[in-house]
Length: 275
Image: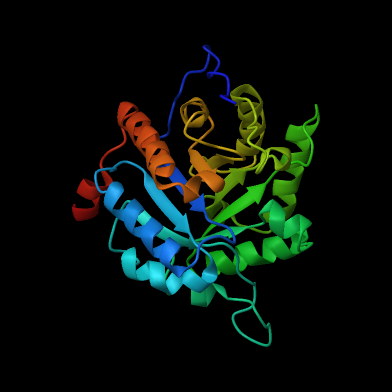
């Protein structure tokens, strides 16, 4: 279903120091051949997308292989992220990966995703420790927060969740965060939050973050609703799940974001990378 167009009273005042970001969370999908093909397609198809940052988050087992296609620090508009990490630097934590391991190949890490909370029972305290460990290692956390059900108290509920996770961070560290608002009831359902509802919650989240911190929307974002979401005043980009596995759809969404960034005065990252 196509989401409603953005409310006509919205005026997009995109902060040009906040680079728009489109992140693709592949979750537990792709075999090696699929991951290689998808990453190569994004790399080649996004060659002329200049004003936004694209982050690919493959399963951890494919990070090394995808890093050969998207090498760390080589492309100003394209980077890698991990889907999770543990807060310890090393030790007897079978099956886990650390921030120090992630930073060998990636710049970002998704933390606190609703699937980690609901399936693996991660609590705000642990998520907060992971955020601190990621920042200490030089990674940029994509911190996910969202409510289970849509209600009149949603924005307060989500803001409280954010505050609990980041309460021990300095303002300097808070400014480095990417916060992804993901209404749990919308994830994987094909039914995104309306732009009006998403804007209300993201506006509340911004009250607890420095101006430089980026806020994304996630939750059944696709090529049909991307523009109406990206035009929201409080939205700096999208965290995309299922649609990120479809090369043409994902590239279309990246292009929409890049076109809007151009309209709002963002400079080419290719140019600034060489200045």
